Length: 312
Image (cartoon, rainbow, N blue to C red; front, side):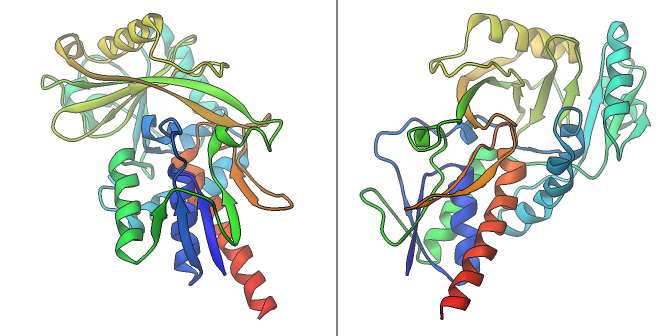
């Protein structure tokens, strides 16, 4: 029987991939006229231990599988770890972050990133973490599926329905809410960073993720709002100010893109697989899409493959 996966974001593509890898018949239904998935505005950090600062242990434990999953399915996974720093006035934030997380070492930031030499006295290095370019990863997953004969189409689903539409599923998931995130992409040829850097601040923490050709993604805003629309002036100013605090070279950066997305989230901010009468929902990724979508996808694929074996 065909499995119709609804959606075109990271959850849908991961689910379609995991189902196909189990030998199940899959198609992807692309919602007609839907807004861009929130995963296109993600940072692409595969950082389970850093997420442990605020996320439950479940995210830290299960999210560790994400790096190897992505490396096995798409090119471009960079295993350079994550560096966490704080300005001298916010050194207490760095110590708090250290207490809240694990699997890190205290380092001199300039030893890892020469561009930061002399700017930060101490930092935390999470060596096992990684990052990728979200849009390249999504395009690679889709291309891989299409090359293996998986159809992408609009229209009505058939057979088993796996609903991965994010906030578009709110009519069926009453407790699903939107959490707004805003980001910038800049071209900063005067800055040379090789790994994601998190800059801690008691009110406005920020992360900066290197992309190809001198581009950087700057993000981290989390707003409890389902308002769609462009980046606010306040968010843009705070993100740019944080980037400048990290490295003055960002002052001359060219802004290439400002974007905002709505992350689908359940009340506990933990992704879930929910079985309904006519479909299975995989939703609620919150800020953990690239970290947890592969985990949920593999769990779902295992369940459905076993179900079909028993049915046969």
